[in-house]
Amino acid sequence: MRVVIAEDAAMMREGLVRLLTDRGFQVCAAVTDADSLRSAVADALPDVAVVDIRMPPTHTDEGLRAAIDIRRDHPEVGVLVFSQYVETRYATRLLTDRPSGVGYLLKDRVADVADFVEALTRVAAGGTALDPEVVGHLMRAGRDVAGLASLTPRERAVLSAMAEGRSNAGIAAALAITPGVVEKHVANIFAKLGLPASDGDNRRVLAVLRHLGG
Image (cartoon, rainbow, N blue to C red):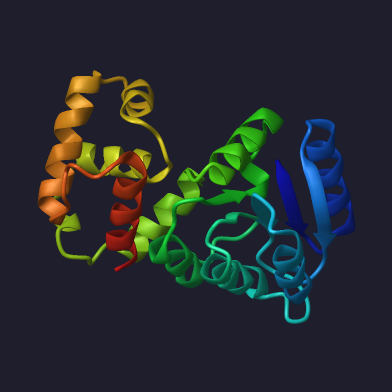
């Protein structure tokens, strides 16, 4: 799997390169700013890009804006945002425009290398990987969207787990309920939000996040 890394902190950047190389990934480029990221992706067309949010020159939201550009210009390239911060405005745009093959993880909450590698692999394959903290911010940002207020607490918990990218079986295990109960909650969520219940797993997550982002 071919990867481009965008991270301005030298220790973190070199650590990611070593971590991924040791696990069989091919790191095509490791850059320090958003413009170099755009160029590296255009040149290498990797399977996935790992992108920090705050990079030179302003250290605000350059990475997320570059990620949006990459998804527009190179839709076949997955993007995993890997940052210390949650930036809801651009994150919502990134996730709702066409969020298959998109992830958002928080650096200080990734304690297991295997979990990071699994999330990166899932995003490269067109899946979704979202930190629950990010999901919580998105849900709070979208709390006034029509339909969300009608969800029960259990339905909101299922919705949050769906947005993290969990399957029905994964939701059942996380919430200690049966898969059949999960299916009923999912059907109720789609009905209340006006979403077609026949969509595939990735599309259902994208649609839910689209509603969350408003």
